[in-house]
Image 1 (cartoon, helix red, strand yellow):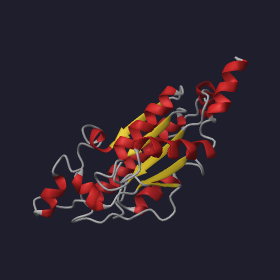
Image 2 (cartoon, rainbow, N blue to C red; image 1 turned 120 degrees about the vertical axis):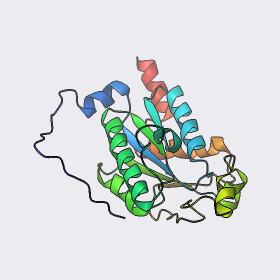
Image 3 (tube, rainbow, N blue to C red; image 1 turned 90 degrees about the vertical axis):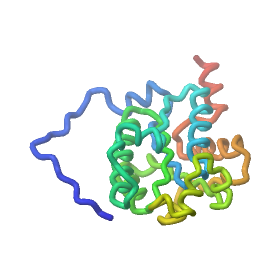
Image 4 (cartoon, helix red, strand yellow; image 1 turned 60 degrees about the vertical axis):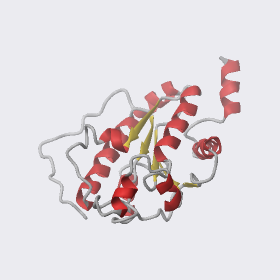
Length: 216
């Protein structure tokens, strides 16, 4: 699974005067990567966008990187082999890091089936910058939500390398948060994520925001 990547030569990192810390101070919150992972149909995109809406209403700067959307452009040249999945997640991880350095809370909704790939992204940022959120939904429920008909095709042998059927999904072992997206109401799932972000100091509590507004 480990693809050999070419290494650029004759390049020097240029340090900007506008730092991440200055951007975060202007935004009023930390930059971070919220990494939603789970089977197709587990509710990753739904939850990520609902959390983004809640954060946007609080005045946070956010962006969602969604699996299907990214494959329309940045990763449009990739298939679904193990190597292509690895490269897909590598690109997304690097892109998410750029957003985070800009002081933005970036929410990524990708199956990202392999632990090693998720851990590789965790390893390119500092401790506390990467919050892995496992959307835990039984495959039976995922299949019942199969609006694209992908599970049906995979079961019929018409779709190769489909995660959960013909390709493995490796459940996170040490994620920051597991959310029951199979039976728990969406609003409750959103609150779980927001609470986790507060505990990690990414955003302030609602009371802190109100207090800051009164002082302003």
